[in-house]
Length: 468
Ligand code: AMP
Ligand code: ZN
Image (tube, rainbow, N blue to C red; front, side, top):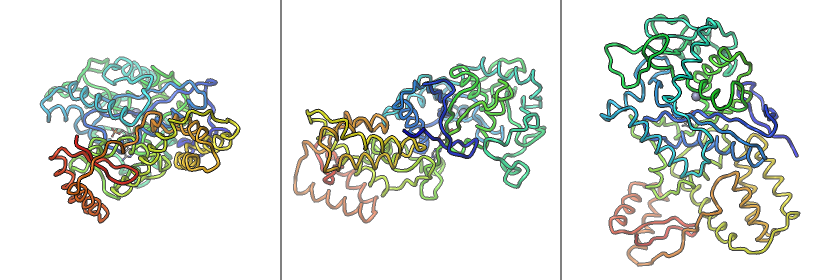
């Protein structure tokens, strides 16, 4: 059996995964800033960490997965200036930061459940770990890594020569110099805040006392403090989206290696590439943010989005558009229908006949989590003319423990449909509109039917309907 390999951002190589403790794996995943709903790009980073976790569990590891909740300190800009995202959202909504955080944390949990993510062992909130953050700040201060300026306490990156290592940064080059704006008084543009002082003229909702004065922690500090609390000061795997590597994760490494006196702090850094929207940047101000709820309103099961996610390797950019989502939804519902049929099979499987497929699937996943290849192995199994139905069922359910499509429970969608010439005709018109990419007309027909209480369901045999 070949060894598990992961691509490590820190070393820029695929490496054999060797856990620090035999049979155990500690994973830290940067979680959401809970000031709004997560978009499907954020969902990709959650699905990626979940796939990693599921695979390691299938390999027999006892996994401890920590995902934090950022409910303070994440400023609008990476330059340690601008407003705090939580404070801003609270002001806009006329609510407290806590109310906003609770609402979006709950939504985040529900979204994760909808795409069948396994609950992490720990899900700590930054505001509940202020003491740990201050303690780490004090350690850094004692080590001489910090300095004070008017608006806060900053980390002096000149004291940490390995600062550029994780992301291979070129701080002196053009891109390096421009990457962060200057804050008045900083010694280097990349120096970052450990603690920001509360401005006596601005009433903030979230402030705490500290040895340096009243204020709030810098965003990066929470991940170093909370990971050490739940995983220790040296652990196996840290994940997040690739955008976090150059600033947030680079700063986490600086604080942790200097504060804990370890190198490397984290053995394997795994980063997912972005979900892109055909070159269009998704932003709330443009109003083109897509959430799982938006997809559900278009008739897509959240698990069809998980299927969509599995179709690309996590280190590839993946393009989301109506066509690719539609194709994924069809693939998903075909698989669900096959799974529903196979679940009824009562015979026993033959492990010898299954072995070669099991190996292929495992090899794909052990090679840096190659989910598209693993999914192809699953399709080979369910289409195979040589395997018995019992063997197909066994393999399908076994592979799905890693892929997470919940095929053990998914119900085929095509039972109990109705027929009526007028409505069937409208359905055909809607299909024609979708094929010609006239989504406005397609949506209008769906809305008209919905107003009559007609629910549309996409099935492997095409769209069907029933009265809801
Ligand atoms: P945020 O709430 O913006 O801090 O993001 C939460 C996680 O989602 C981070 O790991 C980001 O790197 C990741 N992320 C943000 N946008 C995307 C995207 N379009 N595709 C994939 N991951 C993303
Ligand atoms: Zn983080």
